[in-house]
Structures are given as structure tokens and as C-alpha cells.
Amino acid sequence: MIHLALADDEALFRKGMKLLLEDYEGLSVILEAQDGEQLLQQLRQASTLPDVLLLDMKMPNLNGVDTAKALLENFPNIKIIVLSTYFSKAFIVNMIELGAGAYLPKNATPDEVVATIREVYNNGFSYNQAVLEVIRDNMLQKSKPKMPLSFGVDITSREKEILQLICEEYTTGEIAEKLFISPRTVDGHRNNLLEKLGCKNVAGLVVYAIQHQLVKINPETFWFKKR
Image 1 (cartoon, helix red, strand yellow):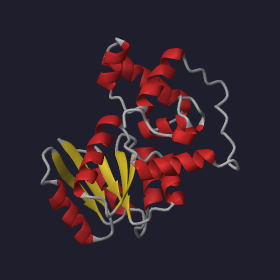
Image 2 (cartoon, rainbow, N blue to C red):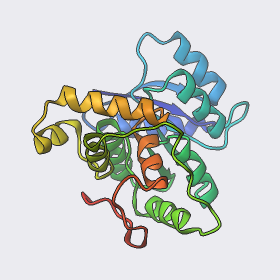
Image 3 (cartoon, rainbow, N blue to C red):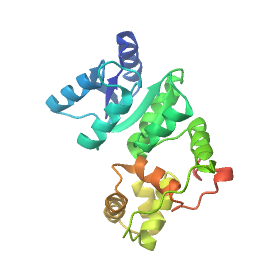
Image 4 (cartoon, rainbow, N blue to C red):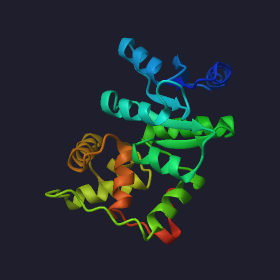
């Protein structure tokens, strides 16, 4: 069962999404909030935390950007999917760099939303073609200098190998099988990468790897191999 939370200031949208999502097997909406402040308050009091949050960008009191920042600081295990009418490059790049696992427009189909929820739950991220194009364009901006690696960061060859497979959307089990190691070993390497690179979650790890060219991806034909 994937436990979900919805943060959106439109009550009708929240109610409709709850009914829609719970028609699908294995999904349960356990929290609803009209803004970021209410969401954080509910999370602090919750006995069970959601696995995935569907987050709107424009909300009163605490908007999507500030809510994402607070979640990454206080509830880093909650995976974020932005579901918004705002689909500009600036919004997408900002939220992805904050660690959002996916960014969808509100006119996405129910099947696309559910498929994205499941991919983010299993893999930590799910970037569709539109979002990948934004990432690609952002990488190709000559005016944006490549960010240097943090001083003293030393990534082993095995960690680089696992990072490459993470960016190709292989699950922990698939990586373990491919490299002939245990899932626990994969988890250990991933946690080491998160700590070394200062990332909060897998989505942030993927973005960091792309920005610092730690993975073998040609920006001219940018596409993860498993797609």
C-alpha cells in the first residue's frame, strides 16, 4: 500500500483526486491539506507518514517551493510529486533542484499520475519527456557554469557504477542483480552517495549527478536508457 498526501488549496480538486486515486489498487490518501502550513502541522501529529506527496505550487500561507524546502529538511523520506498548472522552465528547474521526484501538469491523465506515483515510490523519481527536455535545455545553457564538486568528495568506482544505474531508473533489486551484489549493499552505497554529495533524496542525487557530469549522458540526446 502506497500512502499518499495531497496539498492543494482547491477543496474540490483534493476531493476529486482522493476519489480518483483510491479507485486504483494499492493507493490510499491518508492526509489532505489546503496549504503548506496545514500540511506540516498534520505531518507533525500523524502516526503514519505518507510515502508520496502530491504538491501544488500556488497555495496561501506556505507555497509549494517553501513547503518542499521544509519537507526536505524535516521529512526527507516523503517523496514529492508536483502537480500544478504552473509548468514554466523556472518552476520545473527550481523544484527538481529542490529534490522533487516528478513534476506533472494538472491536466495529466489519471493513469499518468498513478504511474508516476508508483515510479517515484519505487525509484525515487520519474521525469516525463517534457521535464527531461527542460533538464536538457538547462544543461545546455552556456551561460550556466558547471558547478564544481564539493571539496574533498571522493566517489569510488562502484559508487559511480551504482549512480549510473540509479539515473537509468533501475530499482535497488535490479541493481543488485545486475552487479551480483545484495540489495543491502546497494542501499549502503546509495546512502554513502547521499551523504557524500549532500543530497536529501534520490531525485536530488540524480540532478546532482547530471549537473556535475558524474554519469554518462549525452545532453544533446538526453534520455534515460530504461525509457
